[in-house]
Image (tube, rainbow, N blue to C red; front, side, top):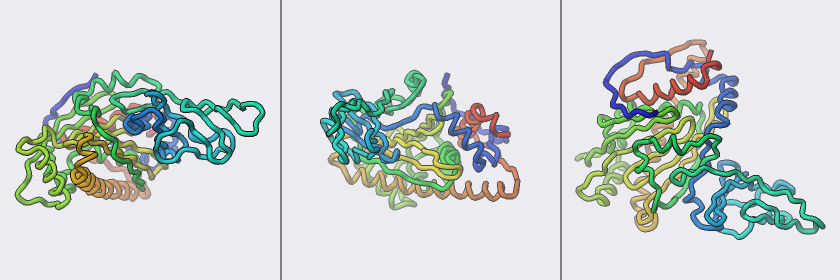
Length: 368
């Protein structure tokens, strides 16, 4: 069950905070990789391959797999030829078949090997094909039915991608533990002191939380245009919002959703951002970020798109600095054998506490 909460102010230390070694210990990282291997794995959105024959090679997987639309059915196909293991599809496009450029082995869009030149018989080596669970166009490899769980999100109507257009994806690489990224994402306490631009657009005093067994959602209000903006980038972005909406303010400043452990969906005025973390080591991770806009904006209002992405990236740079400072501070304590934790600010860090409790539930046996 999920609950919608507006949490009263309180300041207290709890036992939820994670031990310092959990961010640096190879054994803990290995246990995470094992335990979370069966967690729902986001692989992309149906808008990446909207038409029959469309393909989108997943570069964040090293192009080892691709999303393919076969007559409206979207599958995750292996993209490595079964003959000499060459990568076949790159980028995105439309094709009737998948043809390896090395030796012309040819597969249909279901992954079935159609032909292998100069072989008397078809070797029948087909591509791996994974069925996908579709929720609002988001595609998952999952062993459990996550649609019921996600339908309980109170803001699910705001994550409606109907009439939206996939604009682009980008990959960022970081030199800190993946949990640190999630922690910064899940607390609003730093918004005022560290995000001068964002803080003049979103109102964290109007913060509401929803918590589920495997997710949290934070919704914050929208602030009208200030007389003097602290960030030229955000000033440009907010001017674009005002020009589009006129005298009517957007209903929110932002919605920030995390589906534990690795997926995030963000709502901003006329934009949806989907991102997912990929742990790559004890103290490294990558973040794949996808931008989606209503079709009229994506195709005809590029100034709006450019302004929004510039503002988003400004905040991303600031968040990266926060994460790096936290990582470096914890590493300094770790090398000295010291253990420290601080209290949670409520309600601004309620999501951080919720994530720590969720993590402990799954990883408690590995944290001693």
